[in-house]
Image (cartoon, one colour):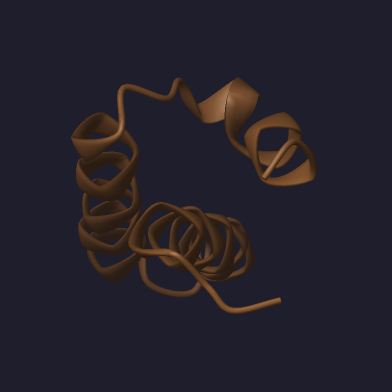
Length: 59
């Protein structure tokens, strides 16, 4: 199945969120910046963070 721009953005947002969580203690500033990148991608598609995985399943 080819990736749509929306699906690609959601996958990237989920990966960025995961990265952010894992690096929160090691580098809080990097974690915050990565989280913002994820949030920007979700906002672009009007998806709340807690909805991202569900949105991917329906694609």
